[in-house]
Image (cartoon, rainbow, N blue to C red; front, top):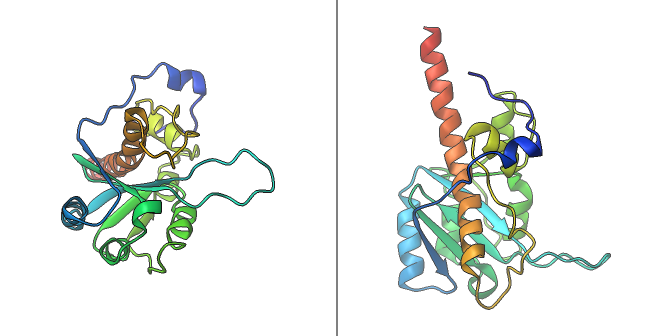
Length: 202
């Protein structure tokens, strides 16, 4: 089996939706929840990574400051509300830790947005788009890569919602968690495929 280079929207629509069945924790300040999140994430070898920013629909207006950071292990996802929390030292240290791989798509812009809160040195970030290229996958959006690699559909219905809202909806939280988690799952799937392919050649 080889991966598709491209996938059409009508092909994606026929796929089953992807589901994240783990826990989702929202963190808007330092304390026990924050400490638990850092402890859990620091012990992971691979975590999914994404951010969200409130969209601006007016031309020539500066982009809004990043609203949330999502980090996810296999069974737990954490939503850090940056405008309330900032990027405290322990979180900056996690983002600088080369031993914890942070898997996202187009990570450079995300890192720049996070550095508006803290001038951390990023280490351990892996751009899934570059990894997918090695497998001949040329569609670069998370939705299309997930359809090609995992054969599942990622909803983008909440993408343009208000990420600065005083209370994020359940739909927003699910969307945010999945966007980070699915990057991790795609990376794991590509690693497994590469390993099995290498074994088959022997």
